[in-house]
Amino acid sequence: MKLYYSPGACSLSPHIILREVGIDFSIERVDLKTKTTEHGVDFNTINSKGQVPFLVLDSGDTLSEGAVIVQYIADQKPARNLIAEKGTLQRYHQLEMLNYISTELHKSFAPLFTPGTPEEYKHSVRTNLIKKFAYLDQILAQQNYICGEHFTVADAYLFTVSGWNKLVGIDISALNHLQKYLAKINQRPEVQKALQIEGLI
Ligand SMILES: N[C@@H](CCC(=O)N[C@@H](CS)C(=O)NCC(=O)O)C(=O)O
Image (cartoon, rainbow, N blue to C red; front, side):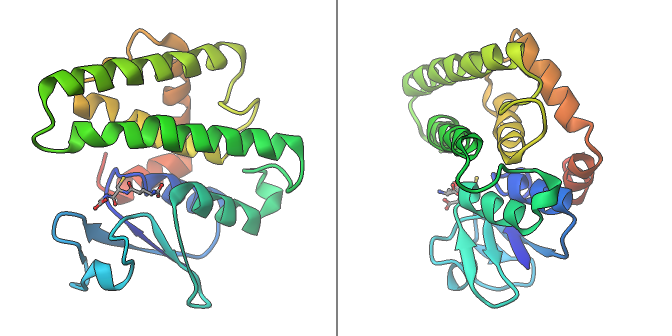
């Protein structure tokens, strides 16, 4: 399969999960400003949403939406335990967290990356995001990973969006449990490889 990505964007989450499951895959970088892939193809002709992540399966079928892509990838190698078995309550709790990260965190960052967003609005967005990260910090005070005691797809997604804080002037340094957790995720060999390949370290 092939993942279209942009360095440090939300596509880092499925990139990490592809590495963690140890599946055969390739990646192709997309310049989101020009909507051109590294091979010079108009990305809109590949994904009419014009967004990463975008996964092309070996069958030619495609998947978009990061929170869904990571489920698909994790389900290819259930033994890796990156997502709970289908139909279990644990699985729904993990989906609950993926959805929270997607709707309450990921999309809230958008105005902070958009040129021309009024400063007053940015201030309220930052305040709102700090509250959401503080909520997650409290969860991480009780457990080692965001969905329990082992690494799951939700951790790759939370690690990815948490990395945007420093880019948009949000200070989460006081959230000690979150800080400790992010340092732990950052040390995972496959996370380090994904960061290196995307040119982020
Ligand atoms: N709903 C999509 C949103 C993906 C998304 O926001 N991708 C961003 C990068 S983090 C992007 O491609 N932005 C360029 C654009 O929207 O034109 C998902 O959850 O995967």
